[in-house]
Length: 149
Image (cartoon, rainbow, N blue to C red; front, side, top):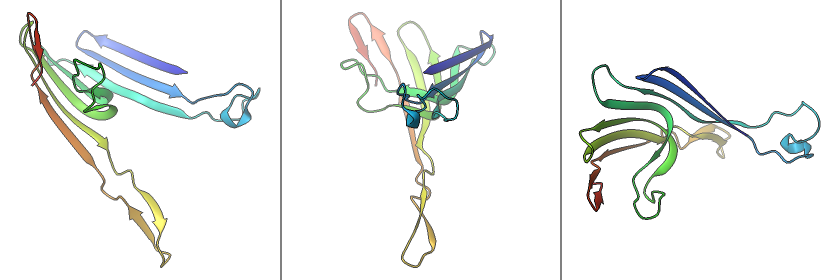
């Protein structure tokens, strides 16, 4: 089940939260499909972001956990980057043909686990395994030509 809630405060401010509630097989107790209420389904926060526009500007800003995808004109899905990730996206449309998008994303952030080495001491593996990504895109669209350097 997917639950997507959007709250719109004004044309310049809105928020979105999107949950995915686990995979359930009807009649199977281990996945929550039994006729009872004693199992906790896995609830996943898929997206949670704010969309806002600073006053008297055409700048659009989205910040939070969101789906980010670099453009792909051939396959539809970007082969370079297409993921749900935390970050900030700035978009400014100069005119119908030219816009500018800048983004910062953090796809991985301290996803470390603990394990014990031979001395029985607890060790954090993958400590500080942060990954930051940034992009600056300039989509250009003219009659018969689309390019995004």
